[in-house]
Length: 89
Image (cartoon, rainbow, N blue to C red; front, side):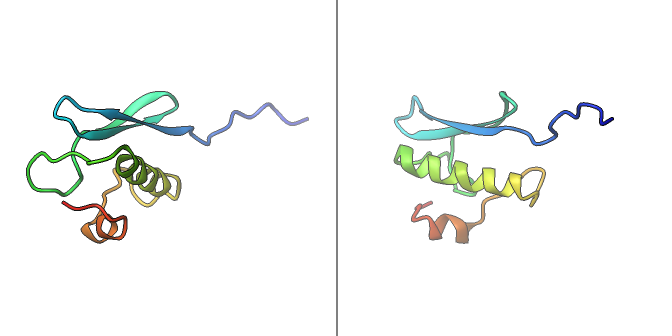
């Protein structure tokens, strides 16, 4: 008889938010626990946030894809990826 097995697949979600500097950011949660708080565009000089909620969501989904594909424990976003998503740094 097989024992009950717990799922080892983590639930990864994101939420976008509007910052006090009138820009957008995102948070990534793993099993409802905050893992990443990203209030600036990764790799951008200075402290520039995303200009739209859709841009923040696009990069959050990219990071989640990398996490789900085990590409990195702390996934990075490259300048080429930002460019391909139409995000200006």
